[in-house]
Length: 251
Image (cartoon, rainbow, N blue to C red; front, top):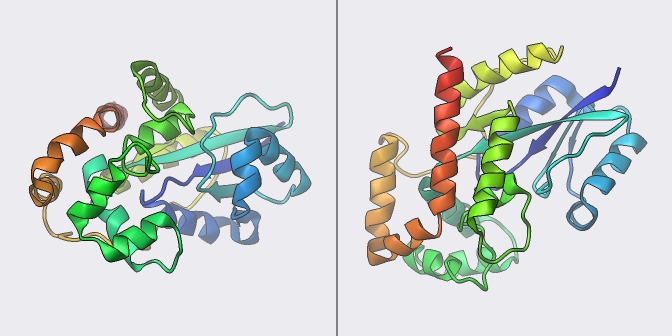
């Protein structure tokens, strides 16, 4: 029987810290919060498989840099877990986090010296990292360095969404955990999915999702058209994910 390892593809500011808390709570030292980013970015799946083979005790691993999709392995069954978030709401969360984090990245520096609109305007530039430009589609499609995504990238992301049973949605976290519980049982994995929310930076948490999104778009003013255009694939992917989650939970 193949060894099964849960692989949390930890997308930046998508409630991943909360899911990591779940994994740590279940697996203790058999959970790896992977931080050796350079080889993961440079060597991809080859490095990941080699790392797991050298560390046979690991049952779950999380990394911000598993942008690649998985091919079949003879020895290990990699079980990918993703979380999607509404791309417009995610923008505010990225900005708030970068303002407070102790880091020398270009994003952290820019967030500390600009207001929200100025920061987003900077992030919309094609020569700046695509942290809030169809970022989630890139992850699902396994695309790393393409400046401009095309329709086939979106279609590849949708294929990954349909293929993977473990796609959670931040705004539907409880429903996502119910789905995960069912799917983990099918794989013979017993896991306690109760959680405590971690690392929250969101404003206006008492407002509904649509009100929060409208508030962000109002703050961006005429820049909102550009933001919506450069997140059009992420919005489409998010809507597909919600439809999938609701169809499964209503079945």
